[in-house]
Length: 625
Image (tube, rainbow, N blue to C red; front, side):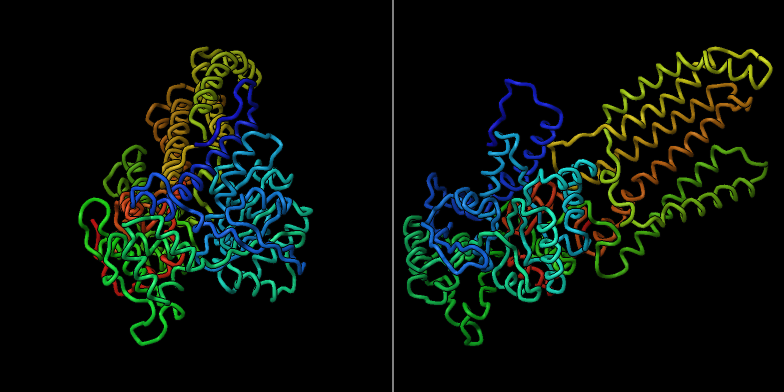
């Protein structure tokens, strides 16, 4: 549980935003990912109230200053905050795949968040996944601000300010997960940012081989940084750990003692946890040997962990509720893992399913046409039903068809990548919308009866009009602008985060803009008998123009993004790539320990498991209803 700040003194708005941001990081990465790590699942599966965990923290690692030849071995279990302080906040965490680098990073994040909650001057520790940098190729400071906005809901201006002033402490994970062709460019961007920022606190987590290869290509490396390289688990460490776990893993311990390949395979906390979760309560003779692969080669050396991933997946499919088939679970996961690999993604957000996201087939093109048709029908019905047209069925239908084609093509063809998710581009607050509307209505009701007669006298020779009409017109007009002004500038950093949050917010945002503008324009033109220029408008014309403006702005400010998302989801469900009930499916996969939730997103239990499932191209996918 994240400790609460001192509430005996008033907390400023900026400080409250900072605390909310820290809570979001805690919920996503500490409670969400670290709290449901495989290490913790071993404990829960075996029903342990106490858990020997030193073996899963091989902190007997080598620490050396970059460019220094001196190496100092640290004792097991050394607190990460101690290492962080020794490094003066500049740390490079290295190790092999599955060595526990991300776990180490998140444990450090946990302690730093507690510090930042207690000390207002402490920089804000934020976890970033570097895999998404490859899509933007932005200057690193711009990318950090963009990620803060997308992942943590920080308004752009505030995010840029915090990055520029060094208010954040970046905890960067997964440099090795950036594609080979762009990893060097990513490290170069980090180095450029580090040089311009003056060596602010920074933590980077990556595989050793990939980092050294990138450094060799650049012939540059991070300066004034302490590198910590995680070491493989020794057989005696693993044996002692299994002995402490008791009878539930007695069979695994017996197999481990006699199989050298299994000992090599269990040299990382990841594979050790997978083996325990897969083969607990199993007899030793039922645990496959890792010494020889199917072709007679050494499986432990040659990547033969594949069969153990297969065993893990089979065991995890027995968990959870119901008895779905292998294809129902692994088919969508295979598509998701393969697509994420092709896009270089490690975190999947449901709202990112836009026409540019799928990488196979013509889903994007079909989704665009579906959106155009839906928008065209909406505008066509509006023009057909409400707009007065010349007599005759032909003119009536022609007006609706032409309007539908024009507006459908105009709005349906907007580039989804340019529009993005509306919550990223515009701050939106329903509370401030109501406040702004109330202020606008009050000002309009009071001021317009004073202003309008003066304006008419100057233009129309002092004609006298209804004061009530003036008041209604002012209330409608200023109420609309007040509502929009309040809604679009009022949101602060929130705490809640749930799957597909971006699309739901975008939908509410589009509906809010549409309703406010439709009411404002409709009241302004329909309820008022005349305007400043003497133009008379009846109720039907006011209703038509109000709905036209509301529908147009609602579609432009988020509606198209929502419709495209729904269209893509529908098409993917029809070809069996992903189920229509996607969030329940992903939650079920998380319950089966195939995925883990990170705030409003999902990650595979480990990148190696993601790679394994992505290779299961033979899994049959069945269309989902």
